Length: 171
Image (cartoon, rainbow, N blue to C red; front, side):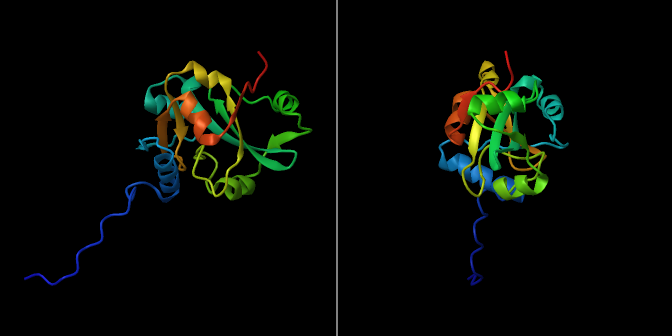
C-alpha cells in the first residue's frame, strides 16, 4: 500500500508566466474565458503582436498608461494609431495628460511596459477605451507579459475595464 502523501493538484494557470496569472484569474472571475496565448517571440509592440497573430495592427488593443493630472490613466488604444494626448485631455476635461514613467506603470498595474494587460492590476484604474477598436470583431490585448496575449471583443473590453469609450485621436 502506498503511504506517500498525495501530490497537490497544479495551481490554476501554473503554465503561464507569473505576471499573466492575475490576468487569467481576473478574466475567469469576470466570466471571460482566459484564452491566454504564449507567443514564442515578443509582442511588445502592436506590429509584433499583429505579425505573430496574423491580424490587422488595428485589432491590437495597446494598453498605455498615462498620467492624467497626476493620476494614472489606462488608455486602451488601437495599434493603428498614437494617442493624441492634447485631444484626449480636452475630451476628459483634464489639464495635462502625459506618459507615465516605467515606475508608475509598474506600481499602477503590477506589469511592465510592453506587457500591460487591461485587467489584473492591484487596484482598478481609470480607463479610456478607444472607440476605433469597435471596428474589429476580435481584438487582442496583452496579458501581463511581453509574450502573452488574449482575444476578446470590444464590448468585453469595455465591461472588463469599466472603461469610458472615447476616440483618442481627432477624426
